[in-house]
Image 1: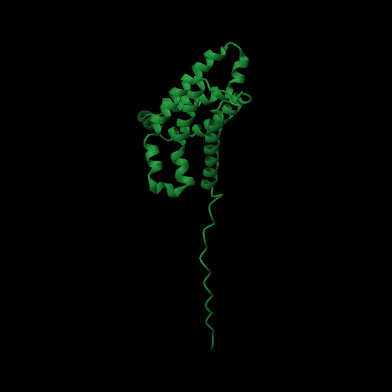
Image 2 (image 1 turned 90 degrees about the vertical axis):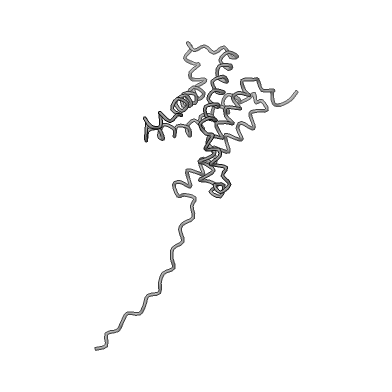
Length: 189
């Protein structure tokens, strides 16, 4: 008997969605936390595919959720359902908003609000970490550790990014050495 269970198909889809989601978070995080990577072009290449990867992650999360609803015979008329699956519901709602506004038309129409709306992705990152921990607690599959590791690492890097952006990790700028004071001219009258 193994300690880790074999993952069902729905978990594979959830893992794929989480993996692609993490890849969509990487360009900005890598650019800020590891500025030397900018020269490699990796963040730029990831940035070019961010929208597509985010939409594929969203589709995988829809199928993941649908299969889990069928597997667990979830009763949507029971109020407890919403409490038990709250982090999945909130995360899905955020992903739904992001997916529907991941187009040029929305960027033009929402203007500054588009960027504010898409900042919700970072809340979704924390909710997704909570979702994986909560739903897999006590019955891990062998997909659980890599899922926790990748979401955990990107969450940690995001927190480092926040510290960098708030100048809490940057080295204090070197101050120019003080110029020696020149002797004051003497008044010899």
